[in-house]
Image (cartoon, rainbow, N blue to C red; front, top):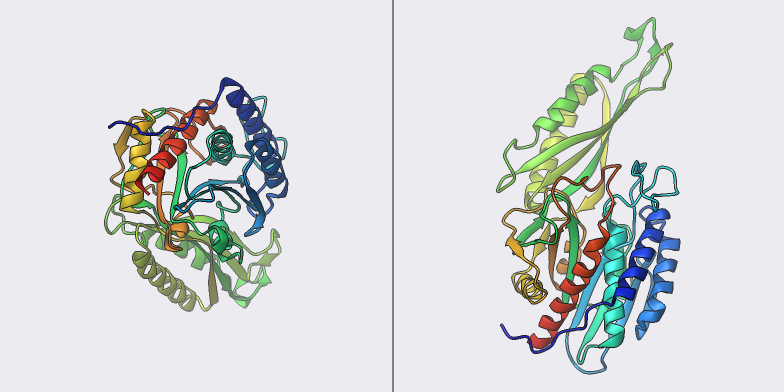
Length: 392
């Protein structure tokens, strides 16, 4: 196809400064809901990018940079994430985390840097119509951020018609995009289960009601609630992620226990059935062992689905940027809250950008975002924006 318009590329100086900024973010990670200093650093970095307006404190510590042409046209949102993970980094990079037990091990520092790079491009070639929103979203890792941003009373001021994002993916060949319409990320939620009996002296365990046998039965049974099918229609999975029982003592037979499990499905409707199955199992096991039980859910991620039209525009952006891409036929088994922007009225799509097989996976202690993805990500977003504006 013949390109009618193309945004300029970042300069070598841009890339040097952006890489340095990414390293700074990496050194000072903040967890979901705690991203105050990260947001401050982003705002400082936005100054030379000259947005027409910056909205801070969206849904917590979210930041939205607005580029408004003043002419009628679509509102196009590009999203990155601000938060890090509660994992100790083991990598040896000079820019490794300085905060014990916290690290950017998912690449959100890189995603935010890409968005800042797009801002630099927009400062030199502003959109001729409509608005562009650079959305630096808080709290993606616990599933609360996108919902909080959308619930913010200022969100209607920037309500997008289109929303786009990317996520680095180490298992994909470097610089290659993977994209397709339909399911992009699985739905998931954390289930916290509490079993309550009564304590007893360790020499007389029959005087109490210990949850020991119950959790020994419950943990494998919970994981068996999953379909056992490969990723595809009907897929479901339960992963036990934590268990504890009583106090760390030798003289007391325990009277309570806690089990955490993550439930995962491709479709939101399938999640309802999996929840019902897990809840029934917990009640049955508790009753059989004479225990009270309770449960609640946390870190709720709805399924993330790529809109067909938005996917086509993002694919056109990849082609215009000269980025080879393959069809994504199955969703990522991981979860994302980006899909909530689609549920709030935007036509949305996410592309997975390869950082190369054989490299550490996200959420592992020696992962680090590849700096050479930064100019590639900027180009994907700028060319997708051009394609979107040409359509309007």
